[in-house]
Image (cartoon, rainbow, N blue to C red; front, top):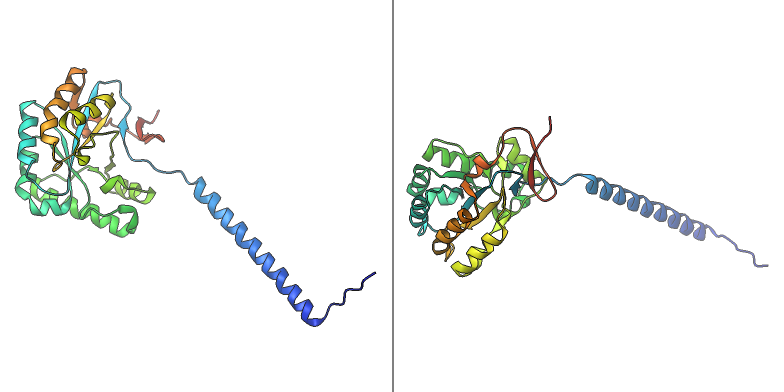
Length: 256
């Protein structure tokens, strides 16, 4: 039989080992608890599409750079008796105030696309509010109306962004049909992309400034109408009342 002699030094070492083990275990438990807490927090989803039994679709344009296509897009919309929603960046509003007025005077709706086009989740809650408020003020100064819709730049959002938008009495709106015009497809490819995906309550994304968007727009409008859809503004697509969005971003009215 071997006798284990514990010296003062070995006892100290043993004690430190026990303390470290307990501390590590505590850190692991704490981290696990935080992970569970974070995982348990429901993710808040913007509006990508609206649940509807009406055959209605909304077309939207994001404007963050250039204005060369603005007048042409407005003429095409007018020719086809269609109105669209334009999400404008505050810097764009600063650079092209006459175009902002023209978009509104043609009967189109104007939404907020932030003031400087940042990745919203990467800025604080206070800066998020500033981005929204600054752009709203610029648009209201030119059109007399403050936007009710907000679209996060790059489609990038988190719970803080969604909450910030709602705290301003606005809807946080994305899209469920991406024309992919930013990849410069041909007008035919762009039209097929939209018409293959569009359905009741869809929101179509295009850009003011993408290369082939003006050439594709007439075919997209005609194709949507040929499918039996009415093209409306996003704000007219949204039903009145309390709502929630499911995990797919589809808006549903709350049951009474």
